[in-house]
Amino acid sequence: MTVTDLVSYEDALASYDPVMGLEVHVELGTKTKMFCGCSTELKQDANSQTCPVCLGLPGALPVVNEIGVESAIKIGLALNCEIAEWCRFARKNYFYPDMPKNFQTSQYDEPIAFDGYLDVQLEDGEIFRVQIERAHMEEDTGKSTHVGGATGRIHGASHSLLDYNRAGIPLIEIVTKPIEGAGARAPEVAKAYVAELRELIKALGVSEARMEMGQMRCDVNLSLRPNGTEKFGTRSETKNVNSLRSVERAARFEIQRHAAVLSSGGTIVQETRHFHEEDGSTTAGRIKDNAEDYRYFPEPDLVPVAPARDWVEELRKGLPELPRLRRARLKEEWGVSEHDMQSILNAGAVELIVATIEAGAPADQARKWWMGELARNANETGRGLDELPITPAQLARVAALVAKGDLNDKLARQVIEGVLAGEGDPDTVVEKRGLKVVSDEGALSTAVDAAIAGNAAIADKIRGGKVAAAGALVGAVMKATRGQADAARVRELILEKLGVEG
Ligand SMILES: [Zn+2]
Image (cartoon, rainbow, N blue to C red; front, top):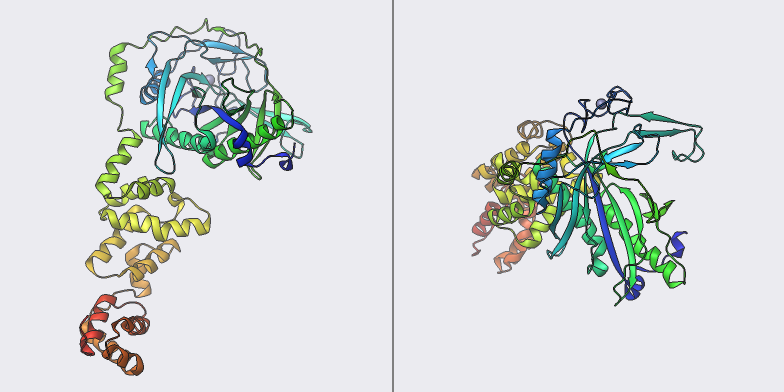
């Protein structure tokens, strides 16, 4: 299957209705693994953080990580789920070299949290409710590195290296119910859902949920059914998609691919798919039929988890303000429109603006710089706003200099430019570049006189009543003062001197 075999997105939607299921794995930020005391710290020497339990040695006995359970309950509560009064772990049996026990300790028919929902906000502000099937606890696998092949995949490799440092790191898997009724907006819903879930996980403080580091990854299940029918089609499962944009692209690609297969009379194979960042396509992984037998059975080495109700209620009371409510509150406090708030959210600027305001800047200034000058710079340099070499405190200082009248907007932009270029903090840049508003009336008056004398024709026009022409003289003064004059005052002076009413 190549890209040319796709049908257009519009044609696909004209005939078919997409149904999605999203499975998100979140790596918890606990200090130790789910069933042993090994450290979860990243980037350590291979296999340096292992023990008999996470290596699956005979006779080793696992113990449940309490923080892991607590985190799972918090996530469940934040997703409006029921919390099980009693549940067990189960063994999911299969062989893969990155899983030394030959089974993954997971949960099967007794998840710790179930039957919830998450309201997500689409780009136009519409709220779409995604129903949550379950959130369950499990452990991560180790990591294989295939050496010798061109692609880094196992095919063509001469040998594989195994690192079990990740084996046993706690994961929460969050599974949606089939998402129906999104129609053409299905890919957008998928992206918005993963984005909202990520914000929620971060707000709960249970994981940093950094997708680029694999701390959060999404499997996109997708099927099509002819418009107007009920029965689900055969689904494909695109695995481990690790950015918001990729989630959207993967769903979109699969809709177009399924439609091409179905409309040419073919059948969809139930299989896993790999997503390719470079062109947004997916390719076949392994065939997966429903009869796949993991021989699940309750884990005999672990006691059941029976969270006391008063503990659950205590955790419920301790939940932080959740992202959507917090955004609604900030929107009011900042006095911005729904549309502007959405742009702020889409730009990843919410926390930066909050921090800038906390550092003393007025809300409108904080928002203006992050969403204007800095968003532009981030865009041009292909960085996230939070990766720019300027801190909220530095930006708040620029805002303070503007408020004091030491800087105008034009000069403030140059100060920000200097900070971004590594010239130091705002005061240092002001000092080094000699950036200060000229508010000395004498100096301004001289500059205005010079501009009038040098542009006699324009001055005459203004005297004749064409006030709009004053802009050209203001420009001349600003140029002469290297942008350091107060433009509003310059305009007043020009009109005064020419005897015209502003
Ligand atoms: Zn261990």
